[in-house]
Length: 142
View 1: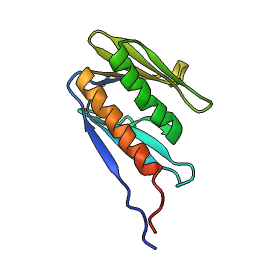
View 2: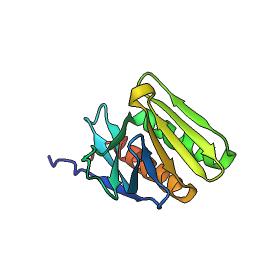
View 3: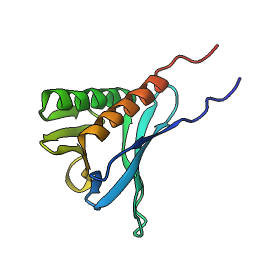
């Protein structure tokens, strides 16, 4: 039986993509699978343009269902032009619509991470998330 290869999807973002509270500009967002086949999750990591402070790359890790809902909420925010939310027992995410782009807010309080991202890049992010969710939900090969 062969082991399933690990897939990493790199989503190219533009020069308006910034992660706060750390103030790090990103060149890419890497999406990867985490966990087992039964309880897989999508991990989002930032590829920073600079990082002398050696900040860890993790933006968020979402279970498969929450990741699927996030991608849908992103597309709803883009097409409807309004803020959307993903709320579950394991996730608290807001997709905030702004005229010049979007803010993805992961968590709350001291654990809050805000990802400022422009319109073209946010569509690529939703596509990457859905591609990773599709991989996680695939049936094992015979």
